[in-house]
View 1 (cartoon, rainbow, N blue to C red):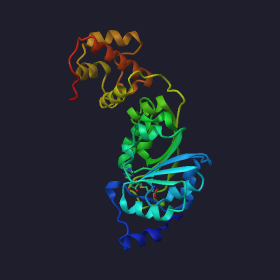
View 2: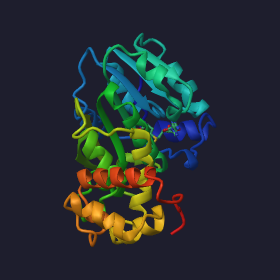
View 3: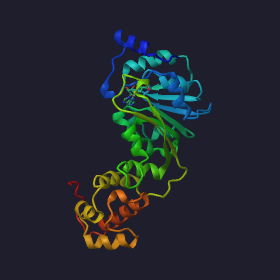
View 4: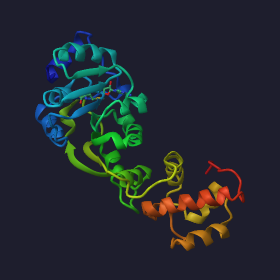
Length: 294
Ligand code: SAM
């Protein structure tokens, strides 16, 4: 087991054992105190099963395998896989999966009897897809601790009416308790990233705040409606979903939403009500296809 210092990482690069691939979002934690602080938010226990996204050279891994019962790391860079295998070969609880975390499917998640903890200093360009992916399996997750770009973390916890409020804030509100628990200094990473990072702690709820009848469809609806976040409801719906203005106004007034409201002013519960109204009106056969052009 080993925590690589900056000098050792530079040596690996000089020796040609690794090369840093920007397109895979590679920035490595080089400060052990910061590493310990990040992991403290995961409240690791000896019976925990942990999945790590992108272990890299194993900075977080080293802290996790010491405590957790089982560890599963997903890494796609072959050079790092070789180094990880060498450094953790004597840890019986260490399992490395050399593939894309985003390819994990129901079979994988259901192979765990209980709930797991997910930890990752995520590649910035993949933070949001990773979050959407994790949410599909929220029932199997006890906690997710993700390091993400500050602006992305702020979207995760975005409040109604602010520019941070987004489809991801709505989903996280429905399924989890999420908070930003720590801000990270750029200097704890090598190479030093251009952007600031934060640690986000996500605790899936036992039951969603409200039931969604067709999660897949609703997950698709959210980014679509939020791409018109500043527009008035009736205008968006008429243009995008080709529903008659009067018909829609009648329906949304029934549930107490003003047609004058803008998308970003709707609380998650209202967005879901709106989704149901649109779905019902469209199923009523009065309307044409969804128009995705703005
Ligand atoms: N955890 C290490 C650390 O904190 O020092 C490395 C973090 S680095 C920001 C992100 C890591 O994710 C890199 O090792 C990269 O190769 C890996 N990675 C990128 N895309 C991935 C994917 N789709 N699945 C699994 N790992 C991925």
